[in-house]
Each structure stands twice: as C-alpha cells, then as structure tokens.
Image (cartoon, rainbow, N blue to C red; front, top):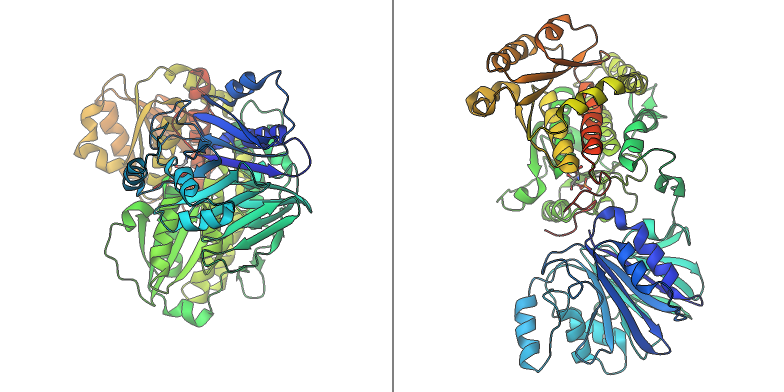
Length: 609
Ligand code: M6R
C-alpha cells in the first residue's frame, strides 16, 4: 500500500528518498513521486506505474537539495495516474504533502476550499490537506499543520514541507510514521522500517496524535495541544539479509523455503520443563484472570484470519474456550458487548492492517485483555494490545503470506497449550507430547520440499485452468481456504474453498471434466467421510489432486494426482499440508508468467478500511 519516505540533512535528498521508496515497493503501488527543496524552491516529479518510470524521468538530472519527501501511491480516491500521484501542493504551491490513509470528510473540505477560490489538480482526498494547511499557513509550518489536522476526519500518516522553511513536519493518526536518526541533524522519516534500515538502526515510533518537526538542528515531538511528548529511541534488530532473495527466483519461494527455520525458531527456548508448559514472556495476564476467561474473540483478515480458524480448534480443545473467529472488518459492524470474561486475540503479520487495528480499538474500549499475535516488531497493533507474542519469522516481503501463516499457527498452538495448562485442562504429560510433536515439524516440512518436482509437473498440467476448487475438513478446511487464496492472489486463477462435505450442497454443480479439485486429506476422524467426498467428485469426472499422508494407498487409487506429505498429528497438519499448496500456487503463477512478489491490485499491508 502507499509508502512515505522523507530526508533532511546534509546529503542530496533524492537518492536517499528514491532508494527508500524502492525498499517499500513490495507493499504494492501504482504511481510514485517526490518533491525536494532546491535552493528554497520546490522541484517535483511524479509518474504512473513502476518506480522505473520515475527513475527514467529524472535520469541525467542532478539535484543538490538536502530536504525532500517521496511517496508510492496505491489508488483509493481517483484512478492511478500522474496527476493523482503524490506529492500534492497547496493553492499557492508553497506547501507540499505526501499522505498515507484516507480523509473521510474530503468532499466537504474540497467544497469549502473551492468556495474560497482554491483550485484542485487531482481527484484525490489527499489534496485537501495541503490546501487546508496552506490556508492556515503564516510562516510557521507546524502551527498550520496543527490547525489543519483539527479539521481532518479519517486516517493519516503525513510528511509535509513548506517552501521557505528548512524543516519536515510529520504527523500520524491510524497510519504509521517513524523517524530514523542517522545522526544529530540528519534524519529519515518513513511509513515502514524497511525504508530506513540501510541508513540507521535507531528509530522512534510515533503514536497516534503525534506531530514531529525535524530540522538540521534536531527533532521535537508534540501533540495536537502543542504539548511536547517523549518517545523512546528503539533499535532495529532484524538484519538487512531479509530483503535479499539469496539466490531464489522470488521472495515468495525464499519465504516458503524458510519455514523449517522459522518454525524451529518459534519453538526454540519455549518449553518450561519444570511447569510442563510453553513459556510466554509478554502476555501480561495474571494466571487468576486466565482462569476467569470464558470466550476468545479472534480478529484478523485474509491469511491471518485463516490462521485464526485453525487456532479456534486449539483454543477449544486444549484450553476449553468458547471461540469466535471474526473478520476484523465485520466485527466493526457488530453490536458486541464484551466483558471481563472475554479475551481478544488480534492476528496480523504487518501489525498495521487498519481493519484489524480498528477492531482491536473497538474491543479495547471494553477494557478487555487483548493478546496480539504479530510479526512486525513495534507495529501499531503490537503496541496497542495489552500483551501478546511476536511470531519472529523475520521480514516477509512476498505479498502472498507464507511463512507468517505457519508462524502464526505455531504461536497460537503454543499459546493454546499454555492457556490449557494454566486453566488445568491439559495435564503436564499431554502438553509435553503436544510440544514434542511440534518439535518434529521443521524436519517434516523439509521432507516436503523433496516433492517439488511432482508439484511442478502438476502445475504444468493446470497452468491454464480457469477455476480450481479446494476442499478440506476440520482443521484442514482453513488449509483449503489458504491454498485457494494463495492461488488466486498470485496466479489470478479463480479458486474457491469449501468444507469438503459442504461441496455437495451447491458447489458440486460446478464440477465437470475440466475442474481441478484439490483435497487436503488427513487420516483423522473425518477420513472415511472425505473418501466419500472424493468419490462424489470422481463420479462427476472432476480432476482430483490430493495432498495425502505418505503411504495413503486408498486415496492414491481414487485420485488423479497425489502429493505426499509426512504423517503428523491432526493438530499440526495444517502447517504441513499448506506447504505443497503454497508451492503449487507459486509454480502455477511462475509458469503463467505472473508477477509473483507483487501481484496486481494487492498490497502487503492494507492500511485503508
Ligand atoms: O498483515 P496482516 O496479517 O494483518 O494482513 C492481513 C491480510 O491482508 C493478508 O493476510 C492478505 O490476505 C495476504 N495478502 C495473504 O497472502
């Protein structure tokens, strides 16, 4: 989604800010632009499409300005075009703004500003911001920004410059902004830490309502009442290796292959042998309160929501909770009344998904405990929960989430065992077995990679399919949903997933000799039933591709194509079964020549509602 980078210091700004937005391109965008102050005059360039177009536009030009802001835009209000790309200027062109988020009252603001004679050059909601700031501007940028922000409704991460003042002002509400301290007098600002890592490890996360002024003399943070606030300087711990492909053709493939390591990391040092339960440092819930809890409400979107569906089984079975898994956006539409017996678990890779953040904020108003299962350290969701656990799978660059999915499931598996032990539902010996089985998982995932050739040959057969159906039962219904999501995200093939038995209540009408149907088959209580579901598809001449436990001769006889995975417990099976489905989607997309790491229309972190 949109990305912001700004720089103020001693060096020419253009290479730094353009390099910075290039680091954010994995988030998805459709146009890019920047503005710098060159001898106290603004110079700005914007182009539609890839950053390469912007680079070509400025090729051969030299810029000496040491202050600038840049942006990658993911269209919301107004189509992707050069005129809608950021930065946007005030009426007198003396204020320039880049913006992430959405200004909800932009129609009323635009009408008002036009009635005052302002002329707008784009269709965006953003353009109202520089016009409004320009209207309040009397030579002090931060004063004008504070006045303008009071009239804005919606969300924003902003970087703003005035032509005649050597400063950058940034502000945030609902959309992240961080300050990177290169050295005193040299600062970089961004919407995502990835843009900053090359220049500094020292960062300051702004909170909602913060406004910061950066000059070559230092920086100051204050709030809308102009009261100074202190935000601590934190150190980035992840290495820049994460943003290298390390010989893999795509980040997605690299991230699929990282799963044995990320799963092993999730388990390392997590077992408390004395108490026979997983260790959790940051849950921040006293054990007596855990016993009082009755209901868990999981809030998430997309892949994280699928991880939540798997966790529903864990939390019910191991810890005796009543569990509701909500799409975060739908939770916002409900009239829920939460109370002291409810626990809220937001799940988010990025920690910035606005639907999940808004749902968490709604839940937090009831004063409930909230445990975040988050990957991105220091992200907004991680900071607004009462406690939680990072999944520590490292930076995920591919827009299609892979290692974060298995990392989330593993974190939730451990959390459910922990809560089950505290609540006296699991005995120490049972928890011990569950943990030991999980320890075998990284090795089992590695075995699946040996089947990649089989998966590639299946991908070759079906690369031109128009539709796919994915079916699974119980814990592997979420696996089917996630497999279908992966395929549609990166190959643009229409794919739907259903609980295997539900298929005969409607979707079976779609099955004919051209329809590939992917089953994930687990040898659990539902095994016999899923065999019948396979027969039902066979009878309609559908093409059966089955992910099965090694040595499953019954399914082998019925299916057209088989992908074997090693046997594991029913509870852990989603983390294994998803791996061949990730690879199948990847290879189909590769053979179709799709842009795998940055699929069309998608963004890595969805920061608009
Ligand atoms: O960062 P989050 O986990 O909150 O993101 C939620 C979804 O936007 C995300 O999982 C999305 O569905 C991915 N593109 C899936 O591959």
